[in-house]
Length: 103
Image (cartoon, rainbow, N blue to C red; front, side, top):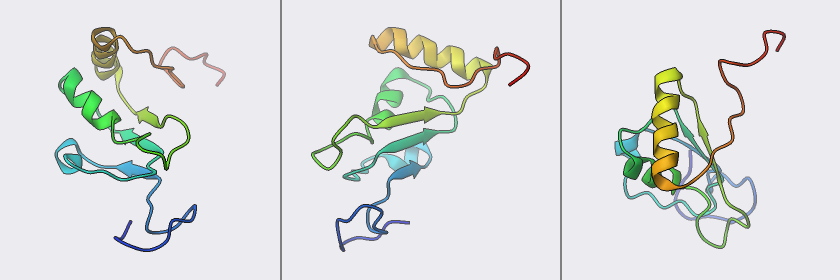
């Protein structure tokens, strides 16, 4: 859990690197250096997805774009697919229900 103030070193307890939260709880959060946001459900709108995904990869503290990890079921995956088309963005599935049975 992050605390205000303190150092800027990598792995510092004052600089969380991953955010796991609910949509209402993260409204207005600005965590410099945040590298990953984990979504445990699909947001209801594409605007909500942009807001949640936008918590990561912000500012000079992050040298590269952040990562959004979405843990979704089949219906939510279809909903996220709709959002990506609406927003003109692409996502890279890491694991799907259609994976080979030997994995």
